[in-house]
Image (cartoon, rainbow, N blue to C red; front, side, top):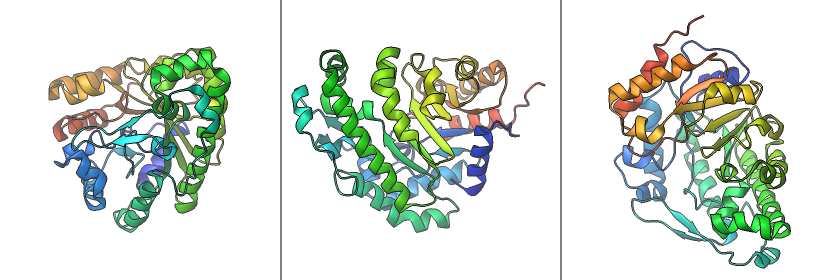
Length: 346
């Protein structure tokens, strides 16, 4: 992110209303490679093509905040690989990590990975280190440490259904698994901050929060997320585009001040449930409107979102979730222009 966008982000999170209204998107491997006319495998395996795709996005849409900005990652394989999960990388499909814990008793012997050496993490951060001069020459800085969340990673190590069932049948082992993952993630975020002192934000992505009850979230989620967000940083960003109603009221206690949700929620309600302490990043349907809709449908949905917003403070207008595959330059330009030309009614 540029210094200008970073200052604007902090201002919005602080409650200021910007003019024009802010626009931002999470962008990563589901959208960037094919939008840049390269394969997903090329995007993952070539530092130069990865850099070119990200530079093209910021140059094509300079008005938009792209979050976290120059995200170095290997999809859902990024963190599970450190715990020994088998990974698969098709040429132009999303990569996948396969479960490697078939019995909850195996958790006792699972070592906590070294965040400096193990899995794909070293490749992720070395790419950023090698590309850092080019990123900064383009007027941007590395602003966020990034990871999937502990429940998300656990679901890949065990399988999502098996993990959630084990919350009931083997709660002691599940707490131990989440403890080990949280310890690894704390070290991984510390290492990112050590490598890139310009980091002043943290982004954690965890959709499994949306598949468990409030009681389960309070037991298996909240304490561990509070640890990870307990950092001296300006921006504490959570992505969960599954159901958020079981956890939304607890986001301020978790430490979150920026939230990207699923599209089937009302921003006014989410702001009310968080006592207007959390900035919302959303919220038109990403696939069915932003990617598959006509330009007119994108414009109409964007206007409906703007007009239904009671108070534009602490909102960054976006789609509900990360940028999906298939969004064209024209569709994205329509969204940005519609937001930026809108004048909120006093």
